[in-house]
View 1 (cartoon, rainbow, N blue to C red):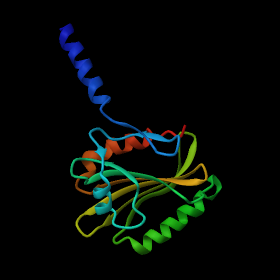
View 2: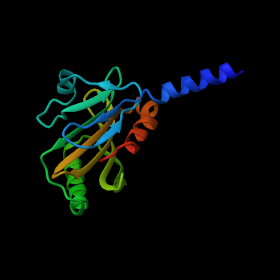
View 3: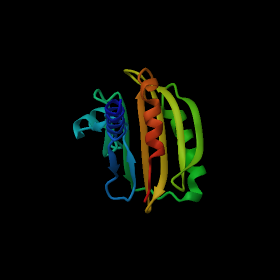
View 4: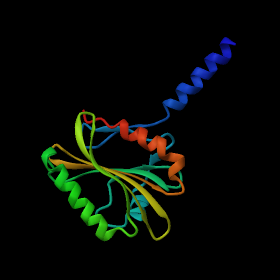
Length: 171
């Protein structure tokens, strides 16, 4: 019985520790990626986000149908400006994202810092999408996360994506 308990504890600790702790280049920020997610190659990132606004970094499941993209952009956003920036994102997204349906648009706090939290679904050319975006100012720049999944994959990954959000640390 002791052997079974010990094996169970070892298996559980292996499963819990399989999420990768990621430090964001050029910052003191970090987060835990969902279990089994691996860094996406530059080629996959360019295919998935074919624009000059593509993130520099992303991790994802094997098919890249569920990803966490993150980047530091050269935009100064102070904590006092977050509501105005949220309103600007909302207005822009309403104009440019086909079939957008808002789930949440709010300011939240993670690790002692305020963040813009945008949760939405939308239509893409090849699949319907579920997005959770987080945006804040960090060291005179904009830190952005995009937790992105096909609507069909989202129920499978929702808990691990939300746990990844909770793991964000800025120091």
